[in-house]
Image (cartoon, rainbow, N blue to C red; front, top):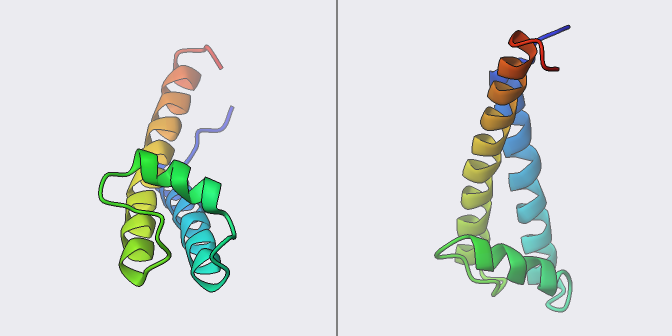
Length: 89
């Protein structure tokens, strides 16, 4: 079995999740009714983020999502490699 690159998975997850929140935040700033429910869910997870469509809100949400995605990718890669090394995967 092949081990995952934890650094690559960390960066990939961070960019995908951060990019998703950025995309929907910008789309919501352009079209205020777009992705409102999604951004409200994101706001319920990240302290300091409010689904208002303002530039400040988009930056805070994107940075929070980048950190969250990186942590998730790191944890997933580490756990996968640990289980693989233990013969469980």
